[in-house]
Amino acid sequence: MDELIGFISSNDKHDRILGILGHQGTLERELIAKRARMIPMTAGKILEELQEKGLVDEKDGNYSLTETGTEVENKMKGLR
Image (tube, rainbow, N blue to C red; front, side, top):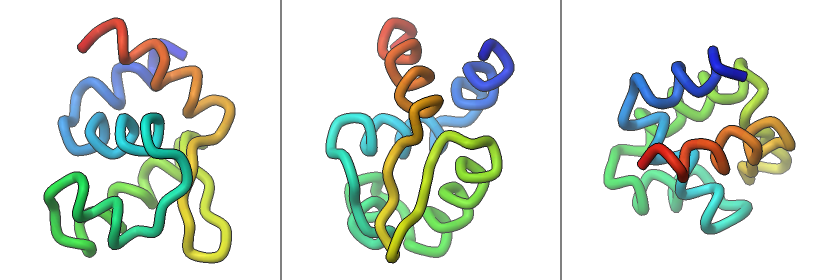
């Protein structure tokens, strides 16, 4: 878990997207990008990285936190 917290806290964009999904729930990539104030291509790359780490899941073009992602987001709230 500490490795995942370090992965998120070391990159503001990772933290921003994780926080958005933690607060807003399931969203499409374009809406995540808009709320994170980044271009959809960048948001998509970050979402892929978060998926590889098992923090985010994608279904039918919608992204949401996994159980692990929710745990990490809850821990990150205390660090912000």
